[in-house]
Length: 360
Ligand code: T4K
Picture 1 (cartoon, rainbow, N blue to C red):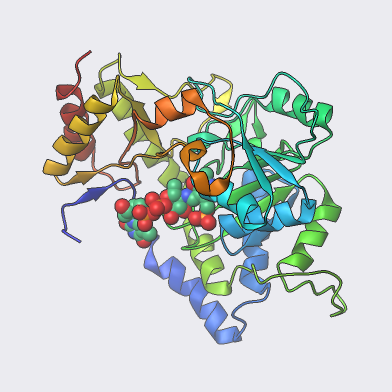
Picture 2 (picture 1 turned 180 degrees about the vertical axis):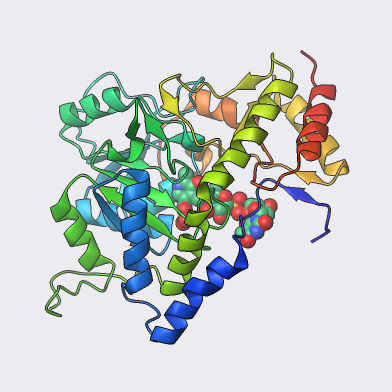
């Protein structure tokens, strides 16, 4: 890859001595996977950092989604079309029916449906899009009315709080991604926050071939464990996470200040303590979006169209719903580069190119 190329994101590489310290612990102990000491240490540090009681580390966010949906054993999953494909692929992979609702044009999150689904949804799976929390109270009410478990795809929501509480404490389960491209990462990895200790215990068995504590095979399981090298990276990144988040915030605020104020931003409510991990902008039309992409590309800048297409347009997932707002947003949205060591000068030149291409 060209040295000066700026991509939508770039993994944070912590001080190498921190990584080596943990890697050496794993190598010296010859304990490399299967809930080893580093996975246990990362679990307890993350519980404290994120403010959650029940947390299970997994191999990646997609496996986290698969395991919890399998645990819930639901028939149908009501979800958002405006998300990464994993949110729909997970239920589709398990043979569950995928049904979509449309999204809010301001928050970009799934709108809680007004009426109870007479058919029974099975499970509700909204995404906190770009880390912006869904309407938690309304989602909980719908979940109660439908008697349907509420699982949040919280892949982007590391460290996000609402009114002082972790967003991960809402709903029955929240699934995080710790992929290399995320604010906090383990190269590959993920976690599930559970409200129920019993469900955490069941999922712990499921990610380890279905073995129970005595080595009996209690349930159908899979291998979805995080290994010690991934936990080593996570522990090293966690030691620097406050600085990383501060850098993201600086870049976010600089974009916000420099970009034309008429350019549509994602609306984040004041009670949210955001993690600043994405900077999406929504243009007036697809032609403007394409013009901006071309101009940025000419400057060796490669933003991404997260999330296009709207997933209700993907026949593979088998849903019949048509989500107008999501399709419209997907045709006009662009995520600008955001990462910890993105230089101030780069933010300034990206914002300048975007502004020059607007017809507001
Ligand atoms: N739910 C939601 C809402 C999600 O967004 C995701 C994942 C999931 C579930 C599933 O979680 P995981 O199973 O992945 O844990 C990237 C990530 O691979 C994906 O984890 C993430 N969401 C998604 C939003 O972004 P791509 O297809 O954009 O990846 P890629 O390889 O094109 O990388 C994007 C840019 O990052 C590249 O232009 C260059 C840069 N990059 C990437 C990698 C992998 C680097 O600089 N270094 C690297 O090592 O999906």
